[in-house]
Length: 525
Image (cartoon, rainbow, N blue to C red; front, side):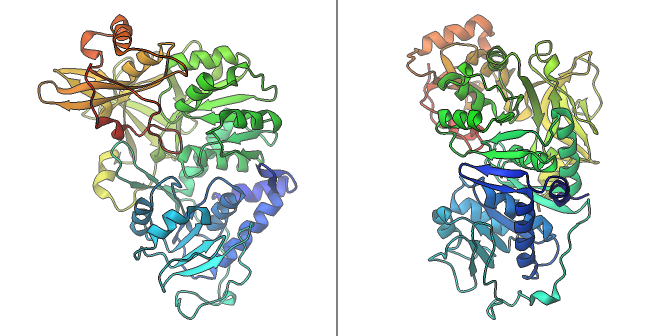
């Protein structure tokens, strides 16, 4: 099986069911498959060759879904692009992995103009309007709302194109072939292309469907961008089981999203920690009933137990899944069964079917129960590697094992607990301090909405602890009160030396915090 067979199976079983709904628009599985076929045929006419990369610069939409499966149908590789990234970053990614075709929406014209200021290797641009930029070597074609190009003619100035009758459509690629490249910046801001095969994504999708008990009756509200691996998982799992994706890109207005959740009778909702912090602290989320909602899922970083408690208190009859994963793991590695949530609060749960997680020391020896080491993952979900970055790849991928960079331990029941990232252990005055522990302490303060902790270089101590804090609306809090709160729960060497109170934390469009941007300004307390 390859990824595109998920769509094929759903059209065979549920051709007239709605696959994707976006405000006043929707598309059935039959319509989605027909549109993806049409795009695939047009892409094959370009004679790019199997495995060629196609970039997607599209917001969450019906168009994105058509493009994603159309590219796969053509036997090509999907490169989802961060729509919040600047043009220079996008141009680097396009050139880095040799994208020849870019499918984009015109409202990203600012980034597109920067991308095509110089040659980045892209030969064909499919867009919803004709751009007023680009070099002579760029072939620009206009698509409609179904991503169909009415006059997909062969240009004499583009020698790579070939007549359509000479091309046969290859529907199903091989399971071990490259399917997608997801660029992830990680903690350093340096982009790395994570290569995921059809096997990686298919196996992870099927295991996720299994533990979430997803079915055709589910309607999942999607706010996470599809270019983000967590959002990509929502796309694949729902399409694979014939469910409906309800897209709402307006999370800047939480009440609007909550209204959609109610009106569309959504059964599932997924977010990162900041998603639930914002909903619980700045909206009517906790006071609503959501009678059709079956489950919530959380991943994309550790969520403080205090936030989990609030979510449990607000929705005692809903299934709450705390999950862990990485882009390099396609992405899901573990989940905490909802029935064990109260008992194992703070745990990331147990591995998915077909995945194993071992706790290892620095010599790569397995550690016993209760001992802290690095989480090492094995299974069909482990990535193929990093695109053209062998040194970085060797650091995390050895003998088929994924060294996650996360530190944790197993308890006597086999449940996993994360202590923190290896790179986020702050070494201050000879002591090793977990960022996660301090962040959880800060979030436990009822006046604090969000908190992020980083290490800042210091000549005397090596590093000092810096906390960047967002207060709840209408709250005023002095730094000395925050320090007093920390001293009640933390050893002195774990108490932040620098505290910044800000209006908002810098975040990726996915909601994850951009931590490396918080190390610059210093305000000592």
